[in-house]
Image (cartoon, rainbow, N blue to C red; front, side, top):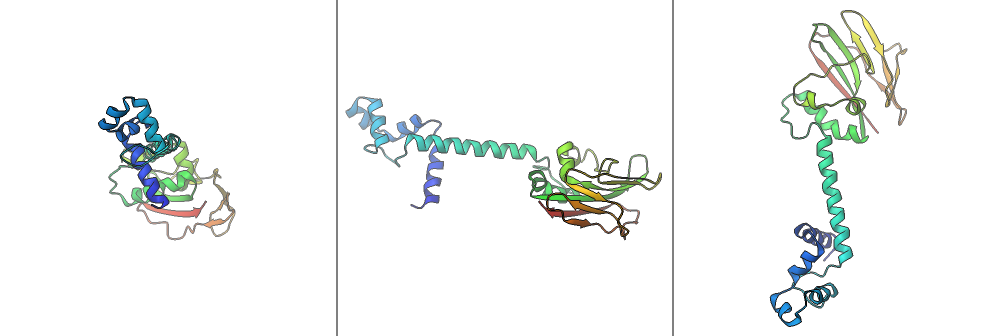
Length: 218
């Protein structure tokens, strides 16, 4: 039996039995108890490998693997709770793209910048670039993935522009430094690897909603 098969066998045991004593009980037959007349002695013989109907497994190995399996379960549960897109039946392609990138943006494997241009609830046309990873940390995206609210740029994002009032704002974020004095348009410098993200503003002046997501490896 190779290492992977051995671990799979142990995992099967620790998930099947709540305690090591339960495992030992499963290895003892009624005949064993009849002749030994002592359950504690029967347990000891199973631990030593002298009795039993299945695989020999030491107490320390059982308890260590039991703890590891439980930690993995808790981590998986926590991750599912953390991912606000998990379990959502997403029909919108933009939300699907955000859902695909959510986990990697949360754990720092990827950093995405989202461009949005749309009309807000006041009928004003707004556009801007959003640091997706930063927004995930500072607000609950459940309202967006559930369809209760649409994602819009804010004056606190990397960039924000109101086409009606002509108000323009730029802000650096924990992940990006905004370079707004570039003659060809906005640049974002990723703070981890200091690479420059060039977002070309040309062709973004149509009146329909637009989305662009740019990813930089973390």
